[in-house]
Amino acid sequence: MAVQAYPVDPDSPSYRLMGFTTLFEAHGFVHVGRPGAAAT
Image (cartoon, rainbow, N blue to C red; front, side, top):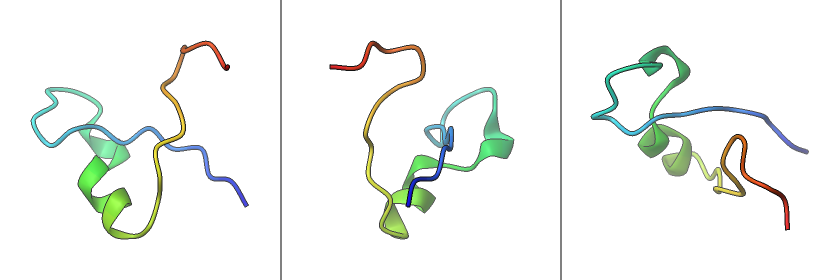
């Protein structure tokens, strides 16, 4: 199963409504890429 999400760092000035990276990590999510980054 995949979930597309755009969490931000807690000190981010914008897009805070998307959730924080620490919350996602605490619930077992893993980082697989950044928006706009080329897939390898």
